[in-house]
Image (cartoon, rainbow, N blue to C red; front, side, top):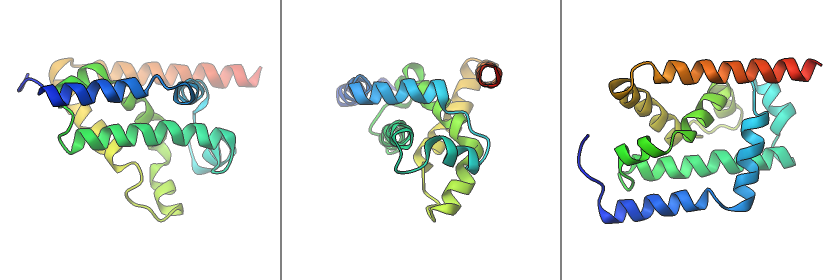
Length: 155
């Protein structure tokens, strides 16, 4: 482990965590992890198009984690503390990663979720150096969740 978090970093970390408890964001996070399985831009537009209720829920989750990761990337949050206690952002990134390039192109915004992406990339390296195999296990679990969701949807 590197340096210890400063008091200010710890306070900000707690504030970021506390925001996750906001009722509408909790609703968005619940919806996102139960429903947000996309493989292409068409899936995204069908499931969570801008201007729809599901689109608002998805963007609430995505924008929350983009903000939190921006604070991390600018050094305002302590990296070890964040990575040790905030794995959810990585799950969000893994869900949106398959369609990030077409979304960035469609909306002419190459920086869309760039902080989330940068933090997720760093998390992979950080995690593999401390808990080898954890990322592969997480990805496998997410794949199983998607398969179960797909099987349920066909029934």
